[in-house]
Length: 135
Image (tube, rainbow, N blue to C red):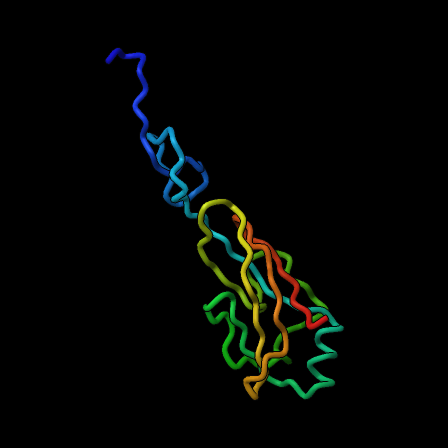
């Protein structure tokens, strides 16, 4: 074998992945990226909550509970989050694999444990804002 021959080293070649392998020259699909975000709603969704007697909610992102028995009146639906820090809106951090993008389900339950919102969000690497809506 000459010094010009490359040896395949498999690993994560995504430089922004949490498990990036600088010595890998072949991606093996094992990359893991951090995705964080804020779930929020607008006045229409807030009106839906009020008009349907919703006072507290649970929010699940995939199988992870983001919010547990939260009083909806504590969220100011007129002031959308401006950053991923210093907000009272439901915040989450999760891992996504294979690429810097993944879809997952968001489910919102009311105080009677009835499903009131079921949606799919496209998670991205880094921090993003995701508006949830029953419409």
